Amino acid sequence: MAWFVIKAKAGRQFKAVDEFEQAQINAYCPTMRKEVRHHQSKKWIEKRFPLFTGYFFGDLLHEDFDRVHTMKHVSSILYDTRPDGSLVSIPAMEIKAWRDAQERGEFDVLRPPPVATLSPGYRFKINEGPLAGHYGSVTSMAGKRAVKAIIEAISNREVEIRIGSIQPVAA
Image 1 (cartoon, rainbow, N blue to C red):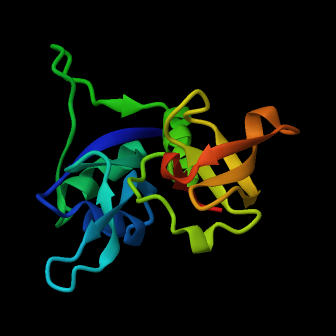
Image 2 (image 1 turned 135 degrees about the horizontal axis):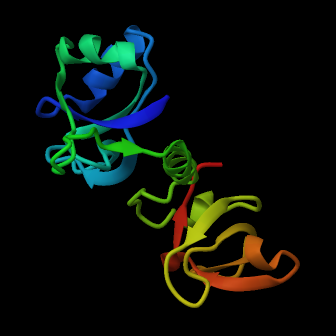
């Protein structure tokens, strides 16, 4: 089985993925979480957006292609522009890497966490500075604007990090 790129009808990626699951075909739509301010209440809310707007991935067998073309929320299966017109496929390892990155919250665009939520054990990703891209866990507070934390890449060393440069990740 191979993962193929599938174009959903406008704004219907999530419905198309549901349609695939109802047909018992594996599908995956990489998403990001983003905090946006509600236009009326002005409260911060968390929304989910597709990472590749208009597209998702399906783990298709040869006999699934006819069913996919008749689905309500699917526009087409992506073909290559080469003369042979082969389908665009994605290696399973790449799909797994995207799933793992999504679980870690690497695609998320979230505000820095409120100081009140930063208790020992709180897991985060560093966004800026020499440790950017690394993950850590809070050990204690270091004032109002920084935390002391253990960084996963340098496990036994506690460092101080500004709260503004950290991003929450899924536990």
